[in-house]
Amino acid sequence: MATYLAFLRAINLGATRKFPKDAIVSATEAAGFSGVATHINTGNVRLETAMRSRARIEAALEESYLAAQGFEVPTIVLTPAELRAVVEEAARLAPDHAGRHYVSLLKVEPGAAVVAALEARSTPDERVHVAGRGVHLVLGESYHLAALSNAVVEKHLGVATNRNLTVLRALVQKWC
Image 1 (cartoon, helix red, strand yellow):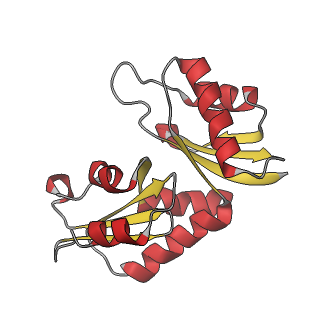
Image 2 (tube, rainbow, N blue to C red):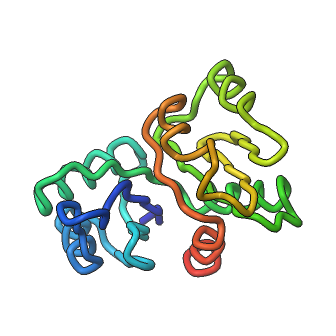
Image 3 (cartoon, helix red, strand yellow):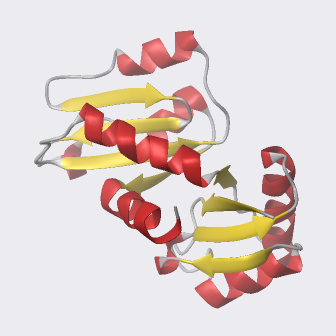
């Protein structure tokens, strides 16, 4: 059995997209996965499976989540090694960063041309750096006014879900 980490996009936002942790665990187990655990109620899931295809795992989870909640839940799956690499890249990229560091996790690794176009949007106050399926948004203290966001990432690179670096570091310590 291999361990994977699933990141659910756009849950627990507003009145119509509620997906409590217990329901996430139940739906994940109903899809045939074991060793299921969650971390905070923002759609971070650890699971075990004999499956080896990330696309098949994502599809099985998305189908089960739709059946359980009645709305689509785009899901991005990483291996523990992939998540460790994302967090290590963050340390290399901005070791002394005093502002905010968010990471958009991508469903599909982007091509070089779209990466270059997105990275060209960086400014001295807001930087974007793409490494594999991790898009690092290094923002200043006025991060809530930033021009760079997960919505911008998705517009250029496709389906993504965003986490702050603190959460990703906690997941690496807890699950990797």
